[in-house]
Length: 248
Image 1 (tube, helix red, strand yellow):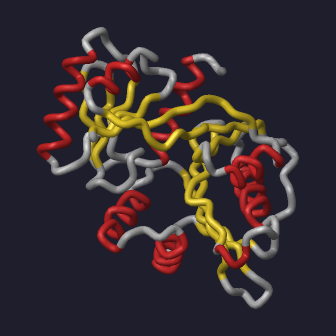
Image 2 (cartoon, one colour; image 1 turned 120 degrees about the vertical axis):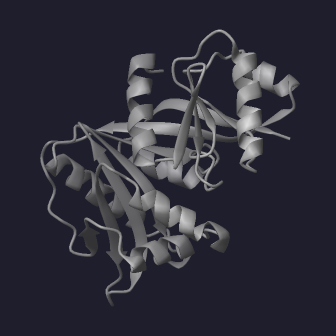
């Protein structure tokens, strides 16, 4: 397990890379809201939590309910471990265990993969294709696109192409200081099992290294065995876990 200062540094980058529309501060917690699109952007997150969690919980419940959103807490190691039991007793269900993984980057910049296209802006086609590949519900398309357009840090959008130039996979990288975060990593189901995900990740890390990044991070569902295996195979290691508590 890494120390809390490093966790907070990664969390800061992650919040900036996946920005909520609104953030409310409450007792050392960040209450993030983004029209319900993804729990990461619509959850209460420990930052520098104070002693009165009960007040934070009541505030979060009032806020999210007023906006018509589920009440969700995202529990990283920055939160007191006892809060799991507290939230369990308050009727919150534990869901979506996730692993944050990190990797040091090789300063030797790899040659650009000729089958991977990198763009500095998200084209309408990239946004539409990612939404289709990741099965984003139509009701959340505008929120997804708004979130992507609101990223303020340097960003690159990747598309991996088949030999006939058909787009078959996508990814997003956001760089902040010496860290690069990887998001929206997806390969169309018919093309999986061909190490395309590995090529996609490698291309994004090479881009990050060329921009001066020294390490990469990503978030993956703990039950996504295939993805965890892929990331570990290319050198990522577990940094810290988190999970959500959702009011039933």
